Image 1 (cartoon, rainbow, N blue to C red):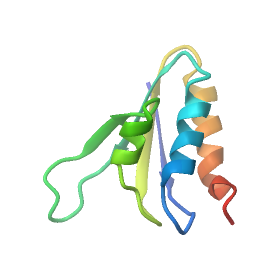
Image 2: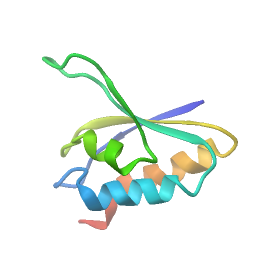
Image 3: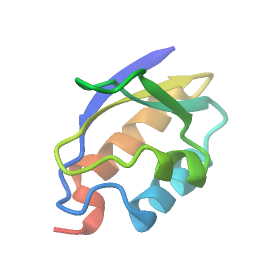
Image 4: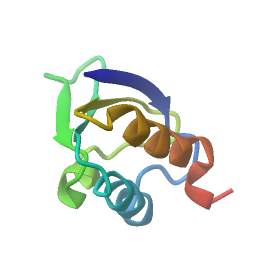
Length: 95
């Protein structure tokens, strides 16, 4: 199992288009993939979703500068995380 922290750098956060890009990219790999959003003050629990589910990714409601943790487990976990992390670095092509 491999984990990486990323920050949402695109101003609009994770809306429908970035969510679709994440799911489309992650679905090319065999490894299990999750995204975790850690609880902030006032929130009850951390939120862990299936990163290959568009509804799950949208449910994160990750805004600009949110910190997320990418978690992959499987034979191609590092390649999967490299691909998804690059989407965050490139701001999903929005800026």
